[in-house]
Length: 403
Image 1 (cartoon, rainbow, N blue to C red):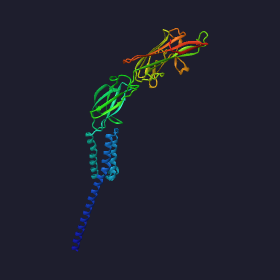
Image 2: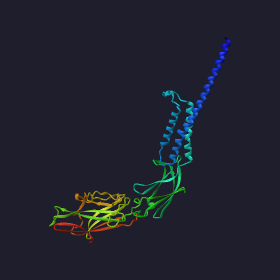
Image 3: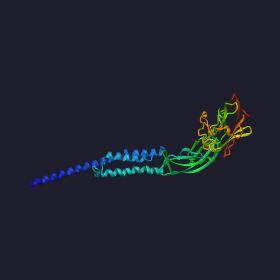
Image 4: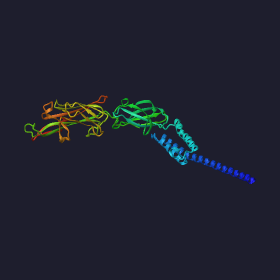
C-alpha cells in the first residue's frame, strides 16, 4: 500500500511537471504571437499612415495643423483595438495587457519621433506663392512658401521690369515664420512708389522676377490695372434741361431751366469712346462752363483718391459732395450734379440757369474739363461746345463743333 502510495505520488508529480511544461510552452507561444501581431499592427496602422501623412504635409503646400495629430490618434486607437489590449477595470474594462501596452506606446513614440527629427533636417521645397496688393494699391506683398517644421530664412533677390526695362533691383531676407490654409510662408513688401514709371495699360506691362538663395527663379506678371494710374484722357458733356416752367419768359413755352454736367477721366480709349476707368489714379478735376468769354458755372474742384471723389457741395448747390469714380475699368464717369433733381435724366440733378454767374443768354457755350496730378503726370483737358438757341417757342441746347 505504501509502495502504491509512493508510486502514485511519483506519477502525480510527473503529470504536474508535464502540465506546467505545456502551459509554459503555450504561454511562450502566445507571447511570441502577440509580439508578432503588435509589430505587424504598428507597421501597418502607425508607421505607414504617419509616414505618408508627413510627406504629404511637407510637399503638398497645404497647411493642415490638425492632420498629423488626428492621424496619430486614429492609428493608436486602431492598434489598441486590433491587439485587444483592453481597458482598466476602473472604467469597466477587463484590465490592460501591460506588456503589449508598453510595447505599443514605446513603439508609437519612436514612430512619431521620426517625422519630427526628419523635419528638422528636411524642409519642403521653397517656392514663390501669391503676389498680393494692398487695398490702396501702394504696396505689393510677395509670399515665399516652404512647408517646414523648424522655420528657416531665405535670401530673395528681385527685380521689376516694364517692357524689358529694369526699374528696381533689391534683396530681402525672408523668415518662413507664418502660415495659412495653403502652408508655411514668409513675405516681403515692395512700395509701388519705388519703381512706378508709367501706365501698364494698354500694352506696357510690369513683371517681377525673383531668385531665392540663388537656386531658383520665378517670374510673375504684375497686375496692369493696379499699375496704371496716370490719367491720359478726359471728356465732358453738358445736357440742357428744357421743359415748361413758370419762369419761362417771352414767347418761349418750353425753356432751358438748367444744365447737367458729366465728366470722365481715365485711360485714353479708342476714338469715339469715353476714357476707361483707373481705380488707382489720384487726381484733381476742374469743370467750367463758359458763356463766351465769361464764366457761367465754376464747379468746385473735385479731388479723387482711389475711386473716392469729394468736393465742396456748398450746402447742396453742387450735389452731394461725394461720388465713386472709375471703380470699374469699363467706365470713368463722374456725375457733377447740381441742386435740383430731374427724374427724366435718371435721377440726376441740374444746375439751375438762374444760378449762372453769367447772363445765361442765347449763344455759344464751352465746357472745359481738366485734370492735374501730383505725381508728375502730364495735365490733360477737354473742351466741348454747345449752341443755345430757340425755335417755335422751344429752347434748344445742341452740341456744336466750336464757338
